[in-house]
Each structure stands twice: as structure tokens, then as C-alpha cells.
Length: 116
Image 1 (cartoon, rainbow, N blue to C red):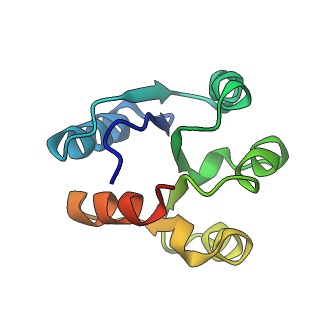
Image 2: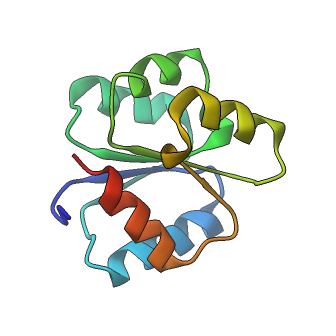
């Protein structure tokens, strides 16, 4: 697992971001970038593709779809009962979807499997 690869977290709620930050830093990931909306995040994603993207399903739109459909280093987290979750799983494959609730171990294992 590449602990030095930057991880971009895109989540609108600070409390969820704080939990994700805590989970990741406990497992050795310290190179984290946090965004509250996709507009700021898009500037970073357009410049480089060597980051891992951790993205709330709420931010999936046609602009982001164009970017993540070309990458392997991403994980979308969502509510298990959302209809959108099923749609996203069929678009990107179930490996790229993580539904709430999940443990830090599950999150880190999933990231480790997807990091290229």
C-alpha cells in the first residue's frame, strides 16, 4: 500500500471529513486534501492524476464522471439504501463503492486494494 499517495477527500459535512481524516491518519495516511465541494476539487484533479479520490456519492455528476471513469484510484462512499448506490456500482464496479456504516479497517483495506 502506498502511504505517500495523496488522498483527496470530497465531503460536504465537516464531521464526516473529521471521521475519515481520523481513520486514515491512524493507519499512516497523512497526505490528505479536503474539499467541501466538487468545484475546488476539480481544479486539483485536472492537474494531476496520481492521487487517490475518496468521494461522497452526492458529488457524482457528468464532470466528475468524465474524470473518474479514466482512473482506478477512487472510492465512492454512499448510503446503502440509496438507489444511486446501485447505479454507481453498476457504472464503476462494486469494488469502487463503500456503503455506510464501515470501519476504519474496511476503509483502509478497500483503499489498499484500489491503489495503483
